[in-house]
Amino acid sequence: MGCDVYSDDWRVLTVEHKDSLPPLNPAQITKLKHLTLVSLAMEKRILPYSQLLDQLQMPTIRELEDLIIDAIYMDVIRGKLDQKAQQFEVEYTIGRDLEPGRIEALLTALQNWASTSSAILTTLDDRLTLLKQQAKTEKETLTAHDATVQRNLRDVQDKVREVRLSKNNPSGGPPLKSGPTAAGLALLEKQKEKEREAARQKELEKQKALGIDENVDMDVDEPGDGKGKSRLSSIKK
Image (cartoon, rainbow, N blue to C red; front, side, top):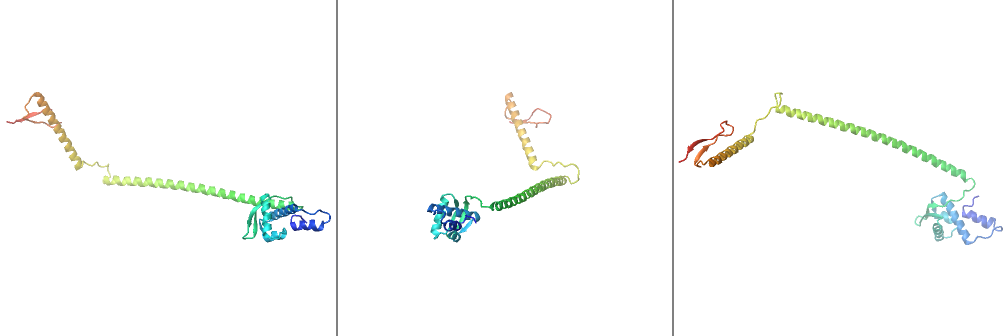
């Protein structure tokens, strides 16, 4: 029989060994109840008020909550009091010495935990390996797709270029050169007119320098006719 439950401890101390043991003072009784609370918290994480009232022999819920609060302040146990659900939710508790026969059960629990953890790690490793392989396959597929798109794009560009060349040269010979447009001809004529005007002004300046009357009308040959000089056409009267 263990001494983890307060009711059992109380019976042992107050009934079975009443004559051989001194009576417990309030501090000792409170400590015994705290240790019993720790033992119960090691078994379950949710402790109903009804169970605690019975095993700790607490007369009221208010006294039970005061006992739990004292244990929390002493850092014996940590948790949350749920008055609505009438239960104590355990978050942490100190450890206690194991009873005889509990070591084997503890070792079994630890072995089960180790086996479960190992199985989880193996599953995670397999999953990671699968994800890496999938990522590699997707990358290779994407690379091949990009290469195909670029190749098709080059083929389309080559075909467009061939179509344009065939339109410019339907006979299939070398590409034809197009002649000057109307706008180009007008620009050339305008340029020639400027050259003639410049030559006329130059000839007038030359005549002025030689002292020839301005009333003399000069015909200036166009540049590039091979004559290289002016001639008098008429003299204005």
